[in-house]
Amino acid sequence: MLDTVDRESLLNLYPALAGLPDERLDALLRLAALELPAGSPLFAEHQPCQGFPLLLAGSIRVVKQSATGRELMLYRVAPGGSCIITSSCLLGRSDYNALGIAETPLRLLLVPAPAFAQLMLDHEPFRDFVFHLFAERIAELMQLVEEVAFSRLDRRLARLIVAQDKPVLNVTHQQLADELGSVREIVSRLLKGFAEQGLVALGREQLTVTDRAGLQKIAAL
Image (cartoon, rainbow, N blue to C red; front, side, top):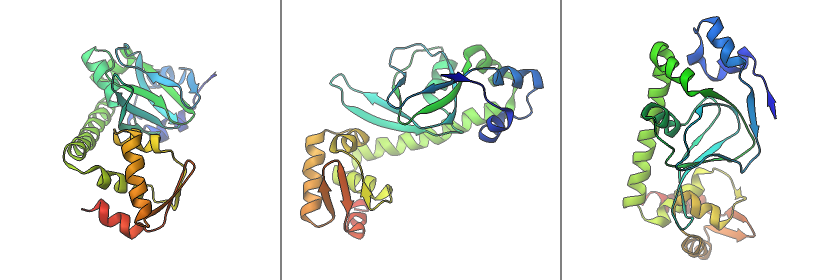
């Protein structure tokens, strides 16, 4: 489904586009907004990059996938943000090296590669926005590398559960494993251990936190 975007909505989410000459902003507003259902692939490895996404609604999961199908979640993109892997592909004129998936229904504008290049060249607020995203994401990815390389999986699992800040999580063991870059069998074993300690109660595609303080202690080990 395609429709158009109004100026106020776009600038509220992406104030870095303010100050563009009217004709250039109007050209962006004339782009048809793309709407994708949850679960849709937005981009895939070895696929050429078609443009720079401006996310208006929804959430994108960016993951690295192994040959066996295991996934490691790299980061999420929310409205007002964008994807640094897309930026690097456009700047380096290279193909994607990760997978982008619509976690929820999406609404976005796809800025064509030539328009993105021109914005980077002559619109300083947009250029600053893109490089600020790079700095934020690199810091997040460095933390992820540190956790994967040096943190015990039970600590990372406890931290993931506590970070949800919900008494009940409607989630599968496979989804938790994907978030952690692990396998379902190991995560299931750890969750069973948490349940035996009285930290959580397990149900079908559901996890209830029964001792948040206990989980927080494990997360801080």
